[in-house]
Length: 147
Image 1 (cartoon, rainbow, N blue to C red):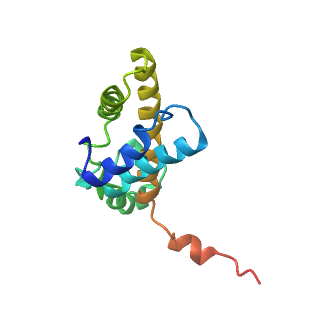
Image 2: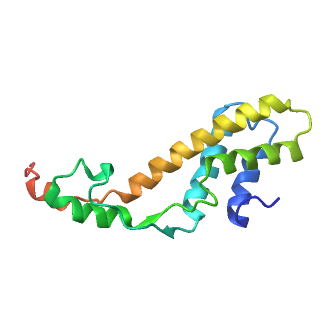
């Protein structure tokens, strides 16, 4: 089974090869979340083009601080080969059809779309979380001294 890198494929197989992959049972969801985390953890990052200082994503910051945050946000971006929602959906459908003949095609398509969308949402949150500079030195300087 070759859909992602060999390491990510192990997590994918642990989730998708079970007959209950689409049951939403807590253990199946845990396997799915581990698979999504593996995509995030084991995928190689690629360089992003420089971000424009007038980009709407920077509009939440004061004008003086935008260059600092632009450098932080530029960093690295997700790998489009593994972080594409449509590609993820196709890989799920392909794996289910190869390993589970008894599933209805429309059911598989619907479930794959739903899991791909959920996976992308999680990956976007993980990516944004990693981009956030922490700890923020200005906030730490203003921190009251609790005793």
